[in-house]
Image (cartoon, rainbow, N blue to C red; front, side, top):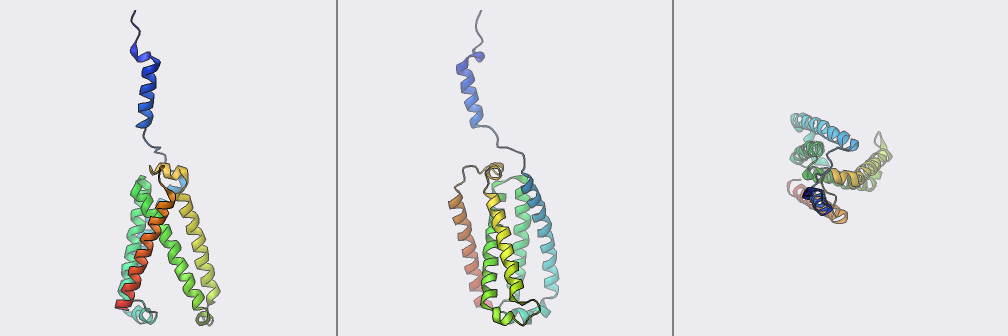
Length: 199
């Protein structure tokens, strides 16, 4: 009686190793990613609506914006950029795509740096804000809290199960963070240059 070759230990080990190499990534979406995806999509839609309200009131806002050295057109472009980024990152997170992870991680790095810049501005203008209704302390606390929250969310995106879900388990975290900070720095420098040109 001929022994079935498919029952041999050699064949089993070969087929098992081949299957493990081609095994699909885990498809179960982490709860945190699901929650953030929904929040990003909803938040992006709200920002998209706010953009049209700002555009309708641009004439009344122009004087105060220019007094702060901010070209009104850059405000509209900035809100549009954030709304598209937020919606796209939410969709990418929900689908579990690699670009979804990169957009979401970029969103949080950008948020940390943007709020750090705002905090620096508040600290440097503390004397001028002393006479306002809320005072500089309110803005310092607001931007500090945002920095902490966005830093924690960024750290969450580097967790093992989250990276596995996005099929990025072999991602070099330090390099990825460096790339994200570099892109944010480039965008910040470009916005500063545009402000100086159109301001």
